[in-house]
Length: 170
Image (cartoon, rainbow, N blue to C red; front, side, top):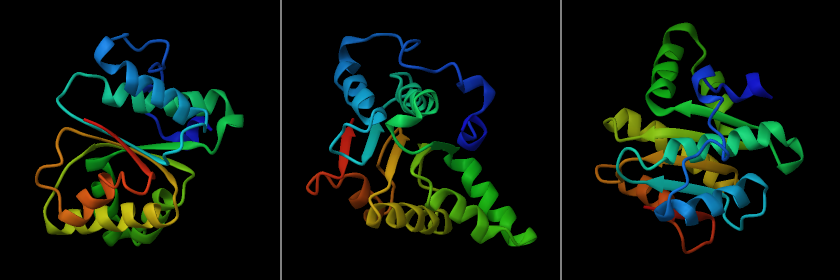
């Protein structure tokens, strides 16, 4: 499960136990712990805001918790957004585009870290990935600094709190 997660070695020590406790993030951490155990009503956890409040650490803590406790739900896979785009682009040259996309589309839990707008092509890939997961109600964690600049359909998916699918912390 550790290899499946694709967590870089440097991030494997990020757990709930190593997370610096902060009053202002207590609600997020409590929801993340429920999410990790499969006890959250939401299937998506979106964390947005300035650098340094622990979004990535919290998200990776969920994946590490799932690795340590497979009984909590499906295995988690991590991807840094710009690395995902690079992998997709390389797939045009070596014929692995669809394999790469499918590798992230269908995993039980996906964390997309440091999401941002990257122009028309990147935004279309983002919508393709998120819409696939949204329709199938697959667990998804997204971290980003701001939703400003994202395509409207992408923002709609990330901010869809009306269905109960998405829990947003900003």
